[in-house]
Amino acid sequence: MTQTMSLADLVGRVPDGAMVIVPPDYSGVAIAATRALVARGVRDLHLVASPSSGLQADLLIAGGCVATMEAAAVSLGEFGMAPAFIKAVKSGAVRMLDSTCPAIHAALNAAEKGLPFIPLRGLIGSDVLRHRADWKQIQNPFADAADPIVLLPALRPDFALFHAAAADCEGNVWVGRRLELSVMAHAARATLVTVERVEECCFFDREDHVASVLPSLYVDAIAVVARGAWPLGVDECYPIEPAALRRYAEGKPLGDPP
Image (cartoon, rainbow, N blue to C red; front, side, top):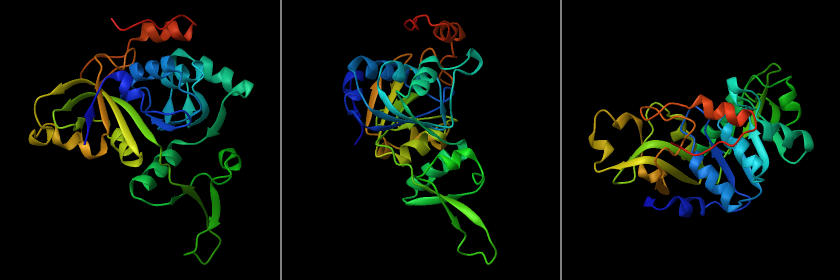
């Protein structure tokens, strides 16, 4: 059953050493929860980006919270490189597991289906495959001729962490067009969500919401945090604030939500 709690209690559920999966900057990033994790002093996280990250990963790395970063990319996009990430990878302070967008999505699909692994093409011959000992290249057992294929272990994080516009009074979360958030929740052992608001209804009774609802079955805890993604945006709530990201990229304090 989904529990509604304070932000401090929600992030308090994440222990040191946990594997935590987070969404890309355009898809419901729990920045307030991220800053709370840094303030709490969580350590040795295995942070997985689904499939990329930016500000969130950089804040956690700058706070000394991350031991391993697994992602297809980490950057601030148009605002430049992620400074703490670049520094940590160059110094060896953070172990980097390079991946690709299709590889991360496929490994999450395996976990949500209860599969131990999943096959994927497109990696053979790449440097990414060469540096991933946990990915196995085999011969397609159904082919008579040579037909190599790569097997990826299922990616089953301890926690999925994201921000959404709303939950309902029964603990269901509306993710809108960001259905990749549902995949993260299906794959993870537990899901922690911050939301802008809780609505006194059931989203499954609303025809305009039902197709984009993450059922409470997959949601372990919710905290209401207004502007919880700031300075990143939330669909239908508020846009990204470029000035704040530009300040951060220039090494200035991120500041607080307006």
